Length: 336
Ligand SMILES: O=P(O)(O)OC[C@H]1O[C@](O)(COP(=O)(O)O)[C@@H](O)[C@@H]1O
Ligand SMILES: [Mg+2]
Ligand SMILES: [Mg+2]
Image (cartoon, rainbow, N blue to C red; front, side, top):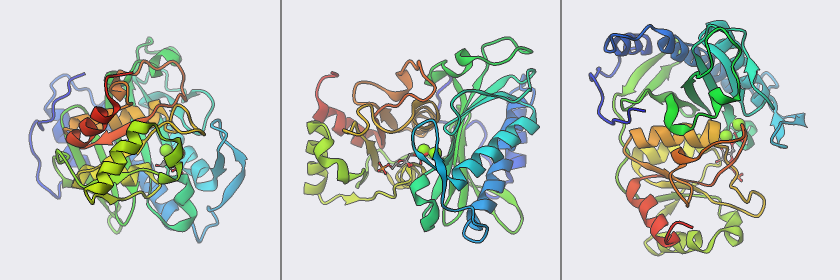
């Protein structure tokens, strides 16, 4: 995978997402437009979910479904709604032959067997914050399929490994709604203008500050954390750094991407492998942070070097400014 943080051709703030995608596609002579269309489909679903998020309180799409997902977690109505919307948009768009969702046990075959791409997705990240009006998000990861076009996708298409992603990003439904993604040539951010129903380029080339003064983790698990994590956090506090933890990975990640900082989800007693899922949280956010000049580690190696074997496998995640992640790893000592 071509990991380069320089943008190809800079585009002006205010460019529409559509114009940006078309110009980017034009830079690659062999591009045939399918990935461009796939990105449009994701943006469309993001607009629809944004509408549902903004009116959830009025349309009773809040609260729990009274059922669990494959993770054994209580599904929120908006989890299910977002899942339906993204799968529908990817099915109707025609470019994705299959989808792997946090909310589904197995691969969802879209019927687009001619589609060259597969998409792994966390339709609604930050589920515990849905009903209390705190920022939530969507995370996506795109691979070019390795199985023959015309045949159904298989697990192999999704278990290629993080460095085989061709695009990844997230949508943050916050004080403003943003789409942030990479296709391997830097990171761009788009802000949604509700009244026009359009994403506009607001952050042409995002790079994370090398260091920062923010750490994001759930200190409720303090006594579960490995000793090196406690040592690192104690030093952060000794330096007077700020603890900022929203409880929505996308929100904490996005703030740290712009201001500098580190997000930590270490192993805990409840989740000895960490809570976050590799295929639709760790890999896409690791790919994007490396494109922005940052680092994403598990504590025993780069997240992107994980060799996935299961759709919903989990791993610890330490992601953010490279100097902060390096300091954490120094506390960890030689790779276990
Ligand atoms: O409540 P905890 O254990 O601190 O976990 C919070 C983390 O879990 C998550 O909600 C997991 O994502 P989902 O909401 O998609 O399951 C992250 O967004 C968040 O950072
Ligand atoms: Mg999530
Ligand atoms: Mg989720």
